[in-house]
Every structure is written in structure tokens, then in C-alpha cells.
Image 1 (cartoon, rainbow, N blue to C red):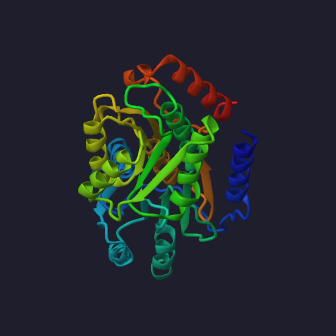
Image 2: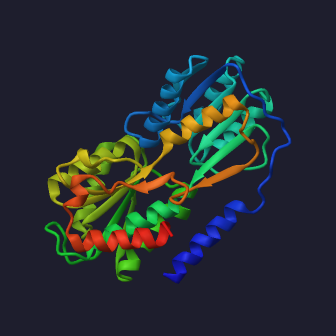
Amino acid sequence: MKKTITILILIAMLFSIGCVRSNNPVRSMDSLSVLVFITGMIAGSPPYELLVEGANEFARFNPNVSIKIYEAGINQATWEEQLGEMVSSGEYDIVISSNPSLPEICARVSRLFPGTKFIITDAHYEGNENIKTYLYNQYEQSLFLGYLAGLITTSDMPFVNNHKKIGFLAAQEFPLLMGHMVPGFLEGARLVDPDIELDFREIGSWVDANKASELTLAMISSGVDVFTSIAGGAAHGMIKTVSENNAYIVWYNTDSYHFTQGNIVGCGKMEQKKLVMEILDDVLKGKIQYGISDVLGVKNGYLNFVFDNPVYQNLPIDIRENFETFFNSYFMQ
């Protein structure tokens, strides 16, 4: 327990050290033209789906705001060129996106087009007067999802075996995943039982559901009985295979219990839609401070767990009581 608390404190310190506040003045705006730049595809990606929902809903209530949705596709090598082409028109006041690898691209594009502002969620970047980032503390979400996975894999639930082994399926490796999410998931599980093992596998694609299915089947054969995933649309291959082969899933970022008939037993929640609407409101009011990064977590209401779904409520009462005690003691005090 003390080790995890120390890690959380160190993460908070890391994100707060060296915070650079911009001297670039902000102003309120009578109208706003927004480019929602999707690095990948919307379908199958909860953060992108919520980003688009939030931007479109804000525009519905604010007729002085125009929204352009642009999907840049999965080839990361083309994102910078596409973003530069979109920004070069001068049509957009701000670009909003959600990807931890995007700030560096935006920094290069902003040198060519300094009149455009860039706002990126799920990312951490400071010191550029044209860029504002918001980082979800995904270590927190990983910790509580891992703890639930640990409770399940050590239980006597119907699909649990005797291996005490959990699985993490990822589309590809990136710093936030390998530095915060995977370690947090395993740390949470090992707070239940230090002997729990993690089977991590990389798909190599955000869209290859067939490869995800193959890897999932191999992981089940190796003893994994509880899964999680950060894999975009490819994760649907995992979901299908888990449903057909009797295992469990804990899910990041959205209420997705409905994807299966009871195999998804716990869902974290990222308030991306809420955040995007707040960001656009702050842009209109001239309240955004560029050049800095805000860290968002459970205590300030941007990460949570979906407790009220009947599927979660059907978990054994001892698992729910243990999980909720852990969640409240760690994150709500």
C-alpha cells in the first residue's frame, strides 16, 4: 500500500515540476472555428468518440461555434503533413485533439502557423505558448482496474482458473501506456495478491481485430482469465474471443458493459466529453492558459468507475465490497 501511495505522489510531483505559464495574452471570442483532429479513426476509440460528442454538443448550444471533424487515419507518419495542410488555410482558431504523441507534432506545425492554438487532451506538454494539454492520471484508473482484476482472478467465479494470471492487450507501445498504465494495472492486481502475473501482448495495429482475437486465444490458453485492453477498434477481436471462451474483461474509459453478455465486469470512466465542453467554453471566455499542462484524476471528477451498472452489481458481494473499500480509501479521501 505504502509503495503505491509513494508512486502516486511521485507522479503528481513529476507533472507539477517545471510548470511554465505562458505570457501570451488570452481574450474572449465572439465566434470560434474548431478543427477536431482525430489521429486515427473515431469508431471503436472511446476517447475519440467522446471528444467528437463533446465538440458537437457544445456547438449545438453555441451557434457562434463551428466544428470540423477530420480523421487523419492510422498512419502516424502522415499526421504532421495532414495537420499542416488543414491549419495552413487559416480557417481554424484552435485545433483540439487527444493523443499523447501529438504535442510534439503540434509544436512543429505551430512554428509555421503561429496564429493557431492547439489543445490536446490525454497528453502532457509544457512551455509552448500555442499549446495547452490536459493529462488524465491513467495510473489511477489502471490501479483500480487492476485491483478489480486481481480480486476476480483470485476468486471462485465461474470462468476463473487457478493460474492467478491477468492479461493486457495493446495496439502498440507508447510512453504513457508503458510508463503508467501497464505498471499501474499490475500494481493494482498485486495489492490483492503479490503472486499475480501479467501477460502483456502487442497487436501492432489499432484496427486488426483478427490479430487481437488470435492473441487473446493464446493468452487464454496460457492461463489468463481477466483481460484489459488499449487497442481501439482492434479490441473488438478480444471482446468476441473472451465472450466465446469464457473469461472476463475490465474496461478503460467508458461504460461498455453492453458489449458482452456479462463478460465485461468493470468499467472505468473518462470524462472526456465533459472536459471538451469545458475547454471550448473556456476558449470562448478567454480563460485558457497556454503553455501549461493540467493533470486530471479521480478527486477532481475526470476519472471514475461505473458502479451502477447491473452487470457490476451482479459480481459477488465480497468482491464489490472489497473493491469499493479500496476505491474509496485510495481516491475519495
